[in-house]
Image 1 (cartoon, rainbow, N blue to C red):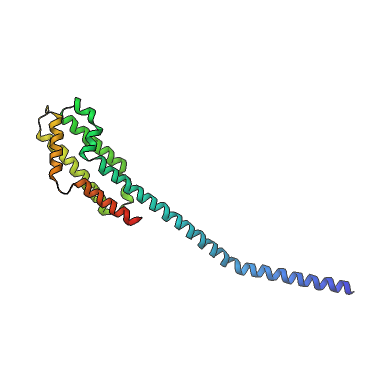
Image 2: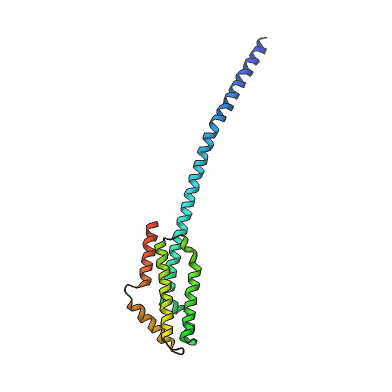
Length: 179
């Protein structure tokens, strides 16, 4: 009878410990789960912040490149072959199409930069296109493209401060503020 009582007590003790552990687990699990979710959320937000920062920095870099690529020196270098075989009106159309293509390629970058920076980029693009268009209309259809280019450079040199440099400074300042 001693053995039966011993195993009975052992069973009661084991069952009591097991039941206590199950109850403790059921009570503590929501707290543990909430803590785990908070840690996952924190890691996820850190990752999202890092990814968002990278997207913003990339947007500023791309728009810096855009403002450089639409400057008269760069756009005329890229279209140098057209200078030899095009008249002023055709060259103007080619330059305007090049600016539009560059802009369309970078249009989504506005999601990642400030409204002020985006407005500066839009203004630069619009003013550049207006300059190319207006100078082309002032010249005769068969005018020399060299004269057209010279007029563009003269106009840009007369603008102080340089609008391309100004937009680049705005973008750099905001980009440096992020990093």
